[in-house]
Each structure stands twice: as structure tokens, then as C-alpha cells.
Image 1: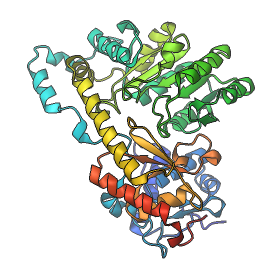
Image 2: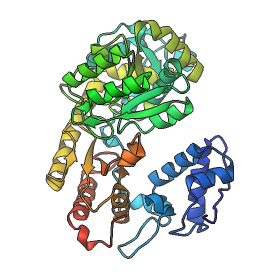
Image 3: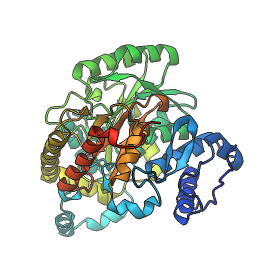
Length: 462
């Protein structure tokens, strides 16, 4: 049994798993946990702390995402180290500012709307003080009207009274799950999915199961088999420029999946966060099967993450209950943020911002294609990221470690996998974030060098 490390917690208002991660970071930074230290297994630490194994699993996953530790499967989990091939993850906090960070899933802030111009417009309005007050249940009508206009922009005509205002996509997803699912229910998701979904499923006591996918999306036969065997309550899907794989589910596949879901009484939760980016996307699931679909249309990735504004539409009979749950979870969504979103949608700022984002996506796509060429990068000229399938002898974890050692931060497939054992051998490369075009090019050149010269590295295999 490992000589157990036990965290000294400073929890405050943080979730327990995050407090464990923070304690781990402090002990690594102070030298209390030297490089190459083997950490307790998930079970050992859970038993020592008398907490659920899942809590430790989440803590270790967060620590690995921060670049503090790495896992070598059955060999164990270790504090980042140095080996003869170059610097590893020693004292990661001191190195982060020098990294080319290709983990941030959005484009550069230079493409964001001009907030100063927006504030000037707001300052000329006579009713601004009302934005500091509580709004009626369901929010202000012109905010819901803006939401309806945005959803129409995505391809679905809805009445303003059916739009539910939420504080971002995660708030919306949390609300939907709390309404439609009961503890022990099964939720189906694409094999690689929105990273917060597993945490929300754990919060609600739900079981996640992955449906196998191809380059058109979830496989109908695989979904049908899950429906028969597990009788799931819902399917969560991010079907347009999926985060992380960048795959867009074809219209034919959407209709097949919707038909199977309707036949088995499975509700569809559609995350349309990227649906505004393509110039000609397939129809929304909520257009194909509105009676069983909850649409989550966040502005975070396409307009501004800091707004925390999302428009949600469910089957008509669910609207009132969804609004009640918004009131329960956040009371109201910030009227100031909703007002800014409504202004941008009505005055053309949203459309201009989308055009800038698309242009920047194309430019960065061209850089990626020029540098990486035919190296199995799955992406699109309208996508924020690419999914890089790795050749032998690399594993995703070792590739991420090698890239980190050379100054590039990437996300391994495991970070997005519903079933970790089936994560696959790939990494997500974000083409944006706050990284300049030149930094992106430099990061991609480093990735290309690692791919093309594995024999020069010291034993990258696990």
C-alpha cells in the first residue's frame, strides 16, 4: 500500500473535490510532494478521508487537467516530474504563463463585442435603473423576445412566452436534469461529451452511458440497443461542431436518432452552443422533434462567455415548470446581462460578431491545415477546435505530457470521455483562446515535431 498522502483541506465554499485538488496543488508547489511521488489510489484516499471514491476521482481528474499530476494506468498516479527527455510538470504553477495554451474552447478576446460602446448606448436610456431591480417570474418580455429571435436565427421559430431565460448552459442543463430525471435513471451521451455533464449526473444521482459514434454522429443501432437494454430517460447531445470532436451530426442521422428516441420515450437535451457558427447547419433536433426536445442555446461561445445568458425551450407543457426551477436555482438571471444580450441581437452586434468569429475560424483552420496537413486532425473551417488522433507509440496522456514539457498545453481524450476505458487515443487542440495566430502556429509546429519524431524521444510508451 502507498505511504498515504492526506490533504490538508481549506474548503471554504468550494466543493470537496476542488478543495482536495487545491490542497494537492499547494503541496506540490511547496515541495511537500516531490516530483515522481506516487499518489494514493482513488480507493485508498477515499477510505483514508472517508469520502466517496467518485469525489477523489473528480479531484484527480481536475488535478490532471491543471497539469499537476499524470496517470500511468495500473502503474499508478504520479506528481509531474522531469526525465531525460526534458522538463516535465514540476511546479506547474510557475510555468503556466509561458505555455501556449491550446485548451481554451473559444476565440480570442479581440473578436468580442465592444463593451464600452454598449455601455454608452445603455447610458442614454431613461429606464436603466430598472435593470438593478428584481424582474417578474420568467423575466422581461423583451428579453424573452430577444431569445426567440436568437433561436429563430438558429432555425426554429418559437413564441417569446415559451423562451426560458437561464444563467448559462450549465444552469440550463442542471435545471432540465433536475426536472426530467430521477436518481438511478440512465442518461445517454456521445462517447466524448461536454466535460461538466458527468459532474451534473453525479450531483443528480444519474448513470451515464456512452453511445458509439462515427463521423456522422451517434450510431442508430447502438442507440437503439441502449434504449432497449437500459431504458434511458434522456439523451444529451452536442450535435453541431461537437465539443470536443468537432463532428456535426448529419440531418439524416438526426432524424434517425430522433425517431428512435420518440419510439422509446427518450427525451433529447440538445446543446446548440455552436449551432450559430456554421453558415448552413443541419436542422436542430428541436425542429425535427419539438415534442421531446429541450433546446439549450447559450451565447457563451459565440458572443461572450461573461454574459452567462442562455435561452432554453422545451416541450410546450414544460415551460412553466422550467421557469419555476430557474427561480429556485438562481432566482433571476441578471437583467443587465439579459439587456446587453438583447441589444446585441437587435442592433446587429451579434451578427457582426459571428462574422468575425467565422473569419477567424477560417484563418486558424488554414494555419492548422498548413502545419499539420494530413495528420488525422478532425476539424472544420467553422470550428473552434480540432480532434487529433495519435499514432503509435503515443498514448494521449503521454502526448499531453510531452507537449507540456515543450511548452504547449493540450486536453487528452479522457477529459471528455463518458467511459474512461474507451477514451481513445486522441487530444483536443483548441485553435483559439487568447492565443495569437503566431502562438498558435508555433504550438502546432511543436505538435507536428512531436508527431514526426517520436523515435528521438525517450520511451514515450506507457
